[in-house]
Length: 355
Image (tube, rainbow, N blue to C red; front, side):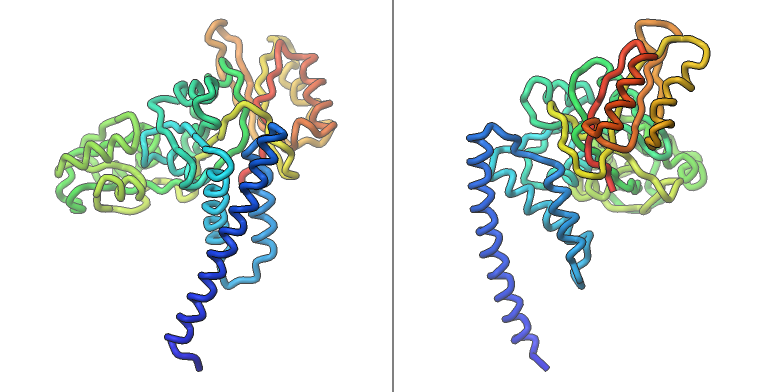
C-alpha cells in the first residue's frame, strides 16, 4: 500500500504533465489561428466543439465522469479560442441571470460576456459587429415561448448558430436566510409564474413584485433584510445572499431553451436542427399543405408556433423547428416546396441540436 505522501507525489507529477500538455495544445491552437487568419476562416466553429466533446466522452472509461469532462474541456476550448481571437458575446442581462448562465455554459469563462438591457439590444450588438454572438432566451418548458425573441427574428437578419438547454432551478434567497423575515418577494414574471403554486402554498399573504430580471431581484434584496428574491444560486453568490429554500419551481422538469445568434450559418454536425419562419395565405387546407412537404419526406417536426403579424390584423407568422440541416438535399427540397404555398419563407438557421 502506498502512503498518502507517495500518492500525492504521483498526483503532482500527473498535474505537471497536464500543464505541459495544455501548453502544447495552446501552441497548436495559436498555429491554427494563424492559418484561419490567412484563409479568412471562422475562428469559432460550434460543430468542431461538439465533435471534441463527443469523441472524448465516447472514449472515456472513467472513473472521471463525462459531465465533469465536458465542463473541463469547455473551459479549455474557451481559453483556446481567446488565444486565437478575442471572443465577445452579448447576452440578455444583467449578470447572474439564467441567460448569463447559458452564455457561460456555451462559451466558457474566457469569453468576454457583455450583459445587455433588452433582447433587441443583444440583436443590435451582433448586427453592428460589436459582438460575435448573442445569447437570448426563446422558450421555457412550463411557460412557453419568449415573444420578444421571436419578434426580433421577424425584423432582423441574424441566424441561429446553436441552442442551449438549461435545467432551471429557482431558489428563494434573502440576506438573513430566515423564512419568518420575508415580507415581500421580488423576481422576473417568468420565475414567478414557474413558482406560482409554491408561493401560494408557502407565502400566501406575502406580496410578490415583478422586476426586470432575477438578478435585479437579488440586487434589491441585498439591501433589504425583509425581502426575498427568486433567483439562481449564482445570484446568491454574486449578491451575498443566503438560500432560504432550494428548488421551489412547481414542475420538476423545468427547462429553458436559449439561442446563440450570429451572422453566419453553422456547419453540419450530423445531429442538427433547422428553424424556419414563414407566412401563409389564408385559404382552405393551407395548414395541411404547409406540413405536407415534410410529412411525405419523413422529416420530423419538433415545434410549430404562430405569432400574429403586427402590421396586418388576423394574419400570422409561423415558426417551425425540424430535424436536419438546410444543406441536406431532402431538407432543402421540402423548404423549396413549402415556398409554393407561402407568402414568404425565411431560414432562421441550422445548428447542432442540444443534448
